[in-house]
Image 1 (tube, rainbow, N blue to C red):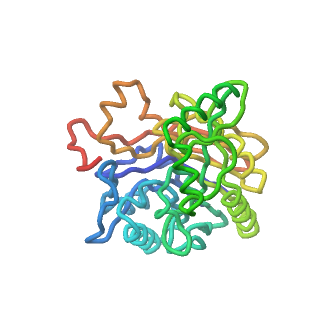
Image 2 (cartoon, rainbow, N blue to C red):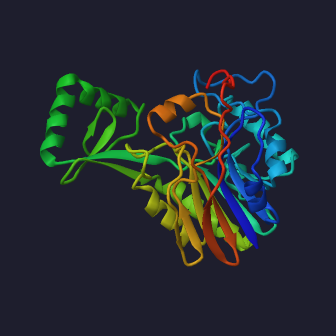
Amino acid sequence: MKVVALGQALIHGPVTWSAALRALCRDADAVVCNFEGCLPAAGAWPMKRKTLHAAHPEALAMLADLGVTHLALGNNHVWDFGHAGILATRAAIADAGFAVSGAGVDLAEAGRAGCRNGVAVLSVDLGPTPDWAMADAGPGVNALRLHRSLGLPAGDIDTLARLAEASGEAERQRRREAIGYDAATQGARFYGLPLEPRDRVEEIWTPDPQDMARILRDVAEAVQRAAVVLVCLHYHHWAPDWAAPPGWLAPLGAALLGAGAQGVVATGPPVAYPAEVRAGQILAPGMGNLVFHTARAARYRKLGIPIETGQAAIFEGGRWRVEAVDVVLPLSGQAPPRGI
């Protein structure tokens, strides 16, 4: 069996695939990528004012021409045009013959693995994601919420507690909890951010336990249905230094691999990070780009951010390997899509 996992595809114009990339995908049982965009129906209304990614109308045909078979939709751009955009995008992808996961009419559909040729792909959006865009009884993405707290020495926590009292924020929060606008909280907070005692200052990210339990069950179920299970993660809770993945990702990936997945591959950061390969499993914290038609290419380059980096994770002969791929970037002088 041969499985090829690629990075994120943000397609706003025609794409020409390199001969090397075509050869890499040839004869694969599954070729997987994150579809970073939306195919909204006519009249769908954008839900934000910037960084909108309505994909090129022929984007799916371009990916099919490469040999892509599975598309991950659990990301922050499938909901750019609201619930109508989510449903239209999922329908277009399914009608085009791809296996699809990560967004749907409800949480059951969004969380279900897309299966084909013995390969199951689960797609999970790690946010940040607005509540309305998370699938539940209605449409949305398959969300795994990450909760952030701030670790501080005890003296710093006491200082912030005094400031919250002096500013009126602490009393405002107590009143909201008493009325029932907000859930009751435990421990110290500063303007909504939980504070935890630590020896040094650090951000602490914790997966929501209910979301995590549900997704682990989904992985275990997929293991019963397929020979290879791949979990595609998409996240924007990046490390301050984009040259390295965030520290919270490795233990999360280890838990998913422990549930039986052969691979965990992540997208979101516009750069590629080294992958960890061991005992027939892979954890790739950043696959980088496959197609990255961004209007901000000049800004990225000025800051030294290597958006031209992308990679493929290849499962063949029961083993994983990683290869660099040619990233499709905007053509020089090409007018950027409006709104991004």
